[in-house]
Image (cartoon, rainbow, N blue to C red; front, side, top):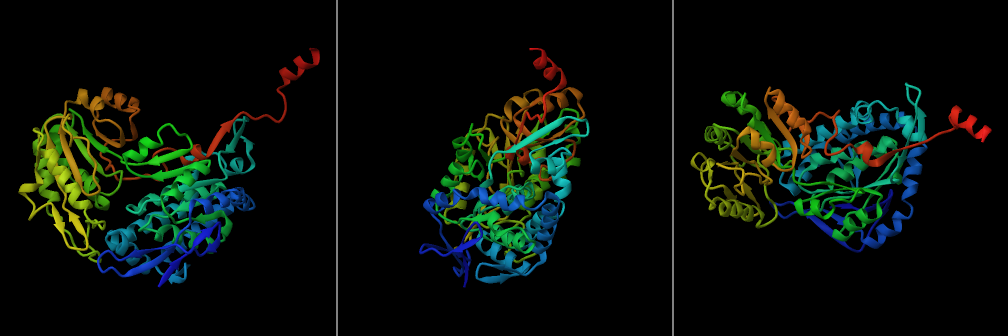
Length: 485
């Protein structure tokens, strides 16, 4: 049986405490994961500067090249992971068996991570706005316009409290290594596979082992990471987001509440956007924060909801190994049933109707004994005030909301990705000024379409480095003033 040790900045550590990662369908133990605790992490964080020091011995261009090699190893290599070896097929089978993601969805997320690693030079060039990485490495440099600039690392390491439900988000921390910042990762309890395989791929590509620490463990480990790391990244619910609100050292990735807004000038042509809507709602089984959870329309809301419901209702649960499987399983007992119950309770409030109910076969909740599924659900709300108008769940769920264009930006609330279908110049200006929309698409771009040359929920470079004033000599006019003073 596979065992995954704690990796204390590269040094394997076997603890007395271990947890088991099981196959959600059969109960088979897939791996035993050794557990760190907050005390171990506190001890190791005293040496966190060594992780950055190890990376600073390698120039950024070489680190970028190593990332590309790591991407190939991660995707196609047979790697030593814990006490065993692992191929791409092994990885996908393990990840699917513990998380409920269909195998092909696991494979797609692998390709996504490998792409980011292989395109690291272009991605960093975009995120730094063309700033040479040597400037970050040295701490200062002179831009082409002749101005001296300086950047200082906010922390020797980035701490990450990783999730178990959406492997695609691991792409967010991959650019850290070529910026010569170390990593302290707490793997998700049912998805340790990505950080462990990624660490193995980095090591095979030549990244120093002491640059990356893996600390699986209970919640206290995650709390210690956010407390001790100068910069940390955490994934969680809206409650988690609120807990760290206003903390500049913690970047929180929570619910996205991503939306499609259809302008007055495009609404009568709504049928031509149905493919875009379906993709935005259904891709990645609706689990991502960038999946569309609400569609705002000034009219034709009921027609849009009906047409979308017809399309989404055809998607049925399939076996995880089925190449056409598009719905993820809920592997924690009672969660799917609770979510379905919450939706039914909210539907009792007048002003909303579940449109998929008349098109799907059977009930929304499908219970299989060892796991559950929730079938795609489309709600039509006659007002943005309804509780289901701005709600997000971890399956293909969307509300189509009747709302005049002039009220949309007042009513949508926080929006991670907003796709606006409009050519209205005034509406575009309002959208550009809307600070509660993080990532803005103007035009027929699905909410799930990521451009890796654009920042996602904040720029990781700006999070890890701060610009500061820096001079190597006094400006001439000042020097002369000092001479005559």
